[in-house]
Length: 245
Length: 246
Image 1 (cartoon, rainbow over the protein chains, first blue to last red):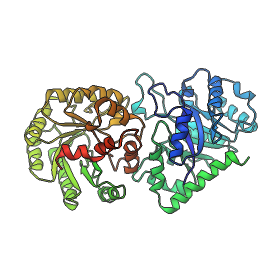
Image 2: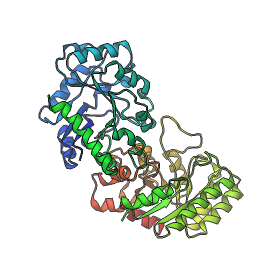
Image 3: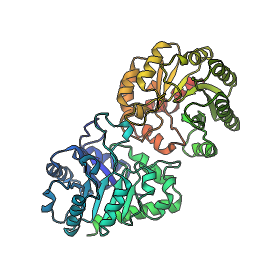
Image 4: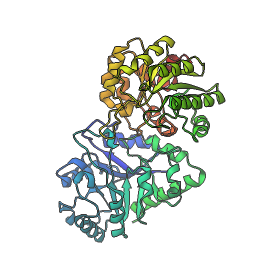
């Protein structure tokens, strides 16, 4: 089945303790469900005013966990990323950092990173259901149109929009733009995006430790054989992007 | 044994809910009706149609399902009472479901609570602490706690643990006549553990909110929770069996 999770976080979320938020706990928990690694973000990163230091901390946490690819935060208004060389993947938090992915600053940064060897950009569309956010800290989701515009502007990159609802996922049109499974829950869970699954546009992402890993896995289990094979194929494809270079 | 206390028989999807329940090992389920089919404030004849629909589905799977009678307490009280009595006198109905027609602090709740006490059946109340998109008649956990204190002899199930969140658990912690169902919202981790620590497993009931939600995702919240196996069994069905006498 799937083994690589594109939607993982470690560290302290400011609003509540997450079960298994430390790296040893997270890795052990995922292993129980057959997940060997994935794309990993720092839970504190979205709120930090010092993303470069957060990136340093994430790299340290990831150090002894080779299956996990650290997603360094790229913030268009800080220029630390100009020093980056061969960083395979970065994460953007446009809602938290208050910019549009289609702004000239964000696109200039993306072009720069692409030239320096970054092949994948992950965009956190949201981290929580907006209805459940702290009333004093409402973070707007990233609009789908701006995701399409961003991805179309950097066709050489793979762009993954995390935590889309299925209505948003279905509106992702750029050919290099993918979504993950975490927030998609129809009946059965992936039914609303069945066609996208077949086209390899939906990647396995659990959003652990915010969400239950087994919830994401159950979405795959509920697919028919063709759907399972498609998810397995897309899981291997994204895994290979980080392990075959 | 798994008893799902929170499913809906939306038009066109009830058959799928019933057949899917088996695939996920759900032995029995409570159908709460297509509660928003006619909007937030359905008229008496619309409420009756919703309950008739529930009845017909329960009669198709009598060994596995029971219904809750849906009501709009904002309708004239005599119609509310008549519809409640019509339903609760049938063996197929074992409780009352309220959605977002009125906030439960409203005096319009009185006839509903009185008839529930008479029949010794629980109220299942939609509930959520919402930062955005709150409906005018929607209730939050502090409202449910208020209701529970006004009617200490009534049994109340507060729906949507992950929507009520930690504060919602605190609100009802000192109300022994309130149970909490795990249905709905995203499959967020950690809330079951919090609730077990704070109010104990005996006051938690597994529910899915299918077909608005997926059985597998919603079961995962209980199955993955770091709790004892005996607590898990209580939550997945034993508590509901006792509460509903079914």
